[in-house]
Length: 280
Image (tube, rainbow, N blue to C red):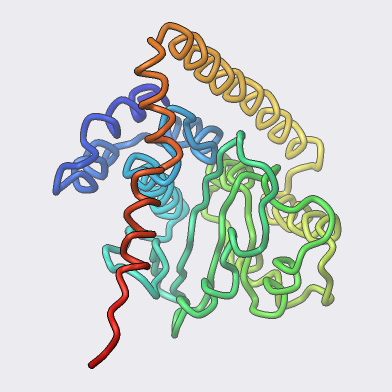
């Protein structure tokens, strides 16, 4: 099961009433090795999915499913929750604690992210009575210098992780106690400094698994290479799109531009706004 398979499957099933169940069932028997490779790629949304489209939303669910499977392999039986709004997306429970999580994915073509994209405070609210809360996103999509999300995570004892850290846990897990990682924020000094936060995460991960910093750095190099490959995937997609546009007739090009600019919808909105009546 590779990235193309998942992209094709999502494109095929989106719009069907049971699309999520189909996707979940397709991944139900995912092996540890396939899951590990998928964690390298899932954090980057395919450019072929339109912005804010149903396909893009389904890709987000795909990331949640991978997170749930990863936790299950880490001896935390987990599931993707079906509830809508005011709830975390992934829930796991062991004999001693419960955990909620949210998995994020971003487009490489999108520029600056801000704290609202990560919803750290919302995740704390969604935790409710559960013990821990984890947010997972691509490592190099997190703010690189300073950000309130680090201060928020420390204040609320939320663990920010990257997919590459998650892959490292999955590949090296042999029954280790992970609660020190889930509880790491409670012991960190108040700071919005990205470097200090990620250094603490790296140290803890290496301590738990008794691995060296260089081993984790090797994993981070994999992320860089994968990001370059997926970046080229996106570039190729948009280059092909440019070539297809060049072949359009003038009339078709104008119609597409009108649609892209949502001009007719804007006219309709204005008409509604000016359709004013004086109350009698």
